[in-house]
Amino acid sequence: MQKKIGEFDIQVKHSRIRNSMCLTVERDGSISLALPLEATEREVEEFVKSKSFWLYSKLAEKEELRHKAIPKKQFVNGEGFLYLGRSYRLKIVKNIEYPVQLKQGRFVMSSTDIDEAQSYLVKWYKKKAQKWLEARLEDFKNQISVQPENIHIRDLGYRWGSCSRNKDLYFHWKVMLLPKSLIDYVLVHELMHLIEPEHNEAFWKLVSLILPDYEDRKNKLDKIGIETDYSF
Image (cartoon, rainbow, N blue to C red; front, side):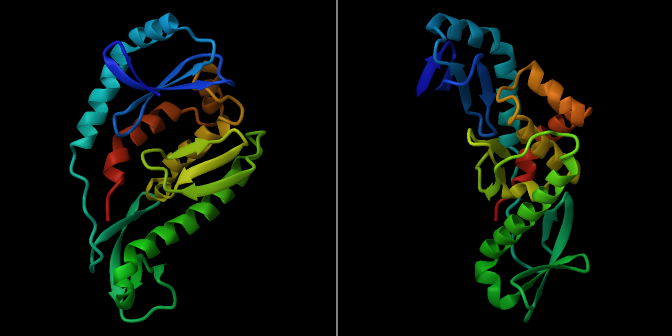
């Protein structure tokens, strides 16, 4: 439910499982507030007022990022496409066995598939993301005593990942554009939501046990989010 609270337009979401309020500023500048069912209108207004400076700071940050030019990718020889934080040039050839290959330091695609190049490349990223995240989860198993039911790769819009109530984890296929250290941050962040659903002190302490430098990774992810989010 969209609601005007103080000076802000906020999407309010009531939750049976929350015991505290949590504000989130999305990458598109929209604000959402998750709160317990028993929260009163006065408590909500006071909470939002107490977070006013933080909200203005985040909104200014998102506005600055949104006004940065997002490069429009073209499927032509020499165009660069990110994978695990590194840019690989595109090479178009006459015939290849698969629609997309990463071969000898280049993305390789067939000239006969250019009309469907975007679809093929997204499918390639999704396939890589599924395998990479599942393998990385195995690496974290000895450190984190949680196990998601399933890992899903989707287009999540402005979100890198999310955790459902039934313990499924969802990740944007664009995580594969990020450097490995930032993918680890996204993965650990969502894994810890299996233990603590709220972004409270206990949650960040859990994240810090696995990634002591999580704040640095989080800040880097915030800064490059829109820049990495190139369009086709």
